[in-house]
Length: 193
Image (tube, rainbow, N blue to C red; front, side, top):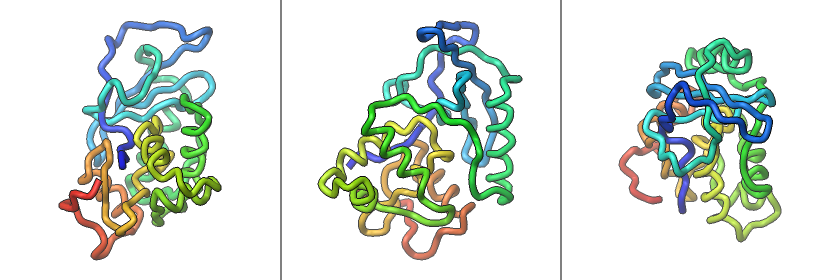
């Protein structure tokens, strides 16, 4: 099963700006307890949160340019800093997911996982009324463009172990510990994918 949600920053020349239709995308980088992350937004809302070493093929985001004063990016950084400081349990941001209809259903399901709780691929598949779609759920989870906000880090293996995460299992553990989830189920050394 392929579960990684955002593992790095796609490095596109900072001054390059290309319109996707009439939509322009902008980015802002920020430091965090899980490394440097890149926030990407359009006028419709936050479109991506990428990890420092993300695979550029994992998420298809149109080219973007730097705009540190973009209001969605400023608010996203503020709310993420509150989350990392243990002062925020949910996010209130406009989101602009780019993906297929099925992927968007999975990402919406991720948004319903409460702070400090986890779900398995099978539980999400059942929530979507498609219990046989566990692998497709894992694939959509891997393509989640808005990591942390759409909390793919809260998806664990059926055994209760931490499994694949594009940001790395160490970062998955950090995020779950911020949320108070832990105990003997968490193991960075579980090689179950």
